[in-house]
Amino acid sequence: MAIKKSNKLPQTAVLKQIVKRCSSLGKKHGYDEEGLPLDVPKGHFAVYVGENRTRYIVPISFLTRPEFQSLLRQAEEEFGFDHDMGLTIPCEEEVFQSLTSMLR
Image (cartoon, rainbow, N blue to C red; front, top):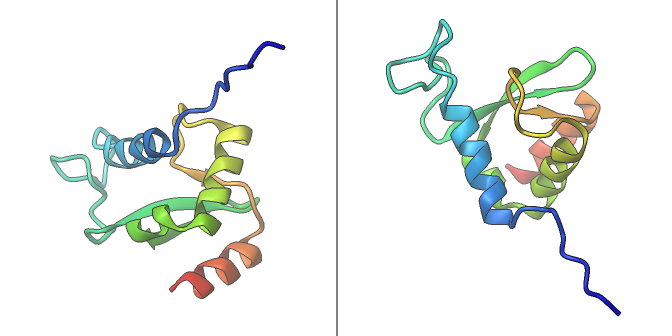
């Protein structure tokens, strides 16, 4: 019986990609010289949620929480991490709001 190697990146590599992606958008208006959004406080990042792609600012500490990591895996499966939009979370806004309120 052959062992099948997973195509999935290790969790730490995925988290590094997310942080890199969030900080590499500096070419667009509204970002400082380091590529960080002007309206996002240090220690936070923006995600887009729901059908209308509503923007939410969440703490980076959420990246270590299993509940949030589940959303990130869903985002990777549905959208991947290599696209022009910001990090998009594939769930309803009400579900996202409920989850983030529990994590705070």
